[in-house]
Length: 145
Ligand SMILES: CC(C)(COP(=O)(O)OP(=O)(O)OC[C@H]1O[C@@H](n2cnc3c(N)ncnc32)[C@H](O)[C@@H]1OP(=O)(O)O)[C@@H](O)C(=O)NCCC(=O)NCCS
Image (cartoon, rainbow, N blue to C red; front, side, top):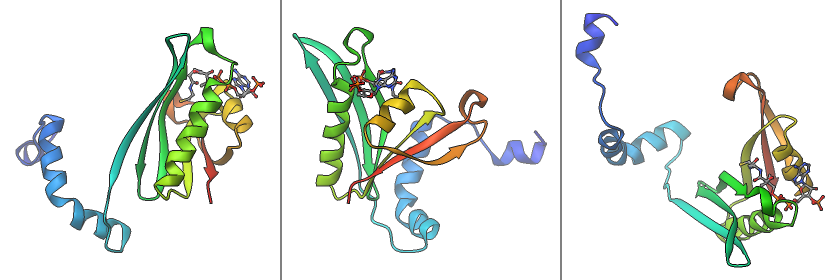
């Protein structure tokens, strides 16, 4: 890195830039999207249980009319028993309650995860070529309205 850049840019802890982002968010988002943005972000978590055990879980965020599945996992011994479908259906209900028009997520093209989401009514919206681990990744979605 050149000396000029070293003076200008410092490595800091992520929590430190969060304060800056929080203070600047309203203006930055409105400039980014081209209209006045009010941004409410929520993180939701659900667990599926069977016989007193946690069979699976999902973490998803809701912001800007969009629900995004961050992670959905069913433990191997509980797979193919409908837990994944039940968790996703609950995600969609909650997203709908908060006026989301769409649920979205990313999955490796041709993966068993993608087969699961397709079976649950999701469609491929775009392919990100040579993405995570340099593999093609599909953006999947289901419209709720
Ligand atoms: C993908 C995953 C969440 C599915 O959970 P699950 O509880 O086994 O799924 P369900 O039993 O609800 O399956 C619903 C339908 O999806 C399809 N499906 C599920 N797993 C599948 C697989 N491995 N291959 C092909 N189709 C599959 C089937 O059509 C299934 O219906 P069926 O069992 O009546 O044939 C689970 O396999 C998993 O945790 N995988 C590892 C992590 C992962 O890939 N997470 C998703 C990305 S975030």
